[in-house]
Image (cartoon, rainbow, N blue to C red; front, side, top):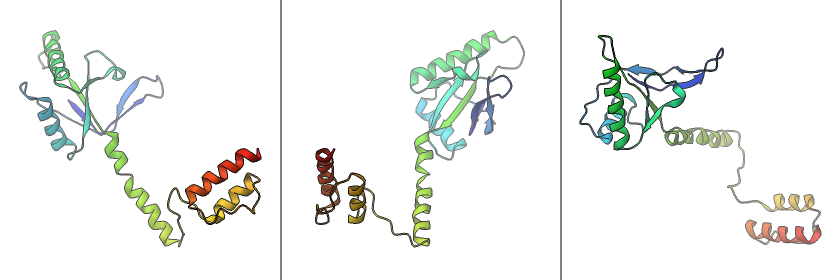
Length: 176
């Protein structure tokens, strides 16, 4: 059984972990498959090509002890665990190893770009005048001077923003 798109959360009444949401499919894995083949197949058929982390649940273990499969040796151990589960099974149904696919965080973070773009669009919509990050105008530097009690007769307007900040910091050390 292969579960994906899920969240593992604590149950409210006993705080033990449970699987919530997502989908579960029966997946047949060829013993001769390489880890990269397995990853490619699962990614293509279940996750629309997204990268993921593969984990499995040991028999009679809770969800807090999932085992990660990151290299070929881990895949071999997973197959050995399945074989042990088969030998220990006393019923007629073949036992199932439970796999979990967790979509990599990097990909979900990359999707945040559209949210940032929307913020910029709303700034244009409301006619906001944005300064580029890391730069300041002279009025902002003057306000910082007031906060640090630096005399206003010191001119920072002719300096680039980064140099003005350095000069301001050197003045702060003198005036403290």
